[in-house]
Length: 375
Ligand SMILES: [Zn+2]
Picture (cartoon, rainbow, N blue to C red):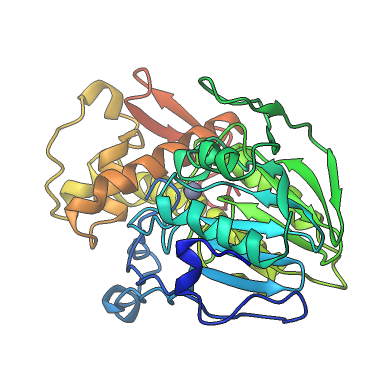
């Protein structure tokens, strides 16, 4: 068999019968996170322990560029490791016959097209991608579409809400099912990270390809927190509770306990919301009409107008951030602020907080009691 140059790097050929990981080339791990992942912040002072504050971030495990995960699933890294993509975007080649399904296409790095060409050649003459499913339109998942079409010109490319530019992308419907020899997947629209985000249920394995909604390491970011949490809840129900099942994320290692990880994400979001509500409530009850930040000796950088502060419980986002995250380096406050804004907007839609002065400040809704949790 004629091999592409990339194949010369392989230590051993892929075989359909081999299970679990086979190591080929290894991309150096990177140590941090981005637009797919969130900045890791210590917990606010309400629940933060000294140990948690001082705990260093764990380095990411190294992932091989090409890994056979099961007899019908091969993971190919997109070759784009970085602070926002972890070890790089995961792309997954599914099936056992000459026609395969591909999930995501990476970021148009030359190594990915070479690796895909190599894997397809190793899988047998004539093996090709017939269907490419995109989880969402972020360039680290979609810029490789043209590379895919250069390797597999006949591939159909599908994404919920279509594509952008001159790339030919078919509309992917919620609930649409795809089948090739050895693999069947069903699309489930799960917005929040982006409006078009879609996960895929892998029927044979009882597993989910989670895109960027659930990652192999850390937590994800989102455009709309309310939609995101709703999607997490929907994803949890896609698993068979008795059977469990893995999560195959858009970035990072395979998660052995998919439902457990989703439940952990939901708890994490709920805790963050509770911390904001606690902060708003505590400010009012502890400090009355004076600024909690100034009472705590913290420089807030701006003095709120007195007329809106008479109630003692309307605060700017940055005042909340500076108080809740007062033990976090100030350089991380902007990232924290984006998350706090998302939480406030979600709580507002739920009638638990109200904005004052065109969203400049926020306070608990009068219907939210001061002595118990609103969540
Ligand atoms: Zn991504």
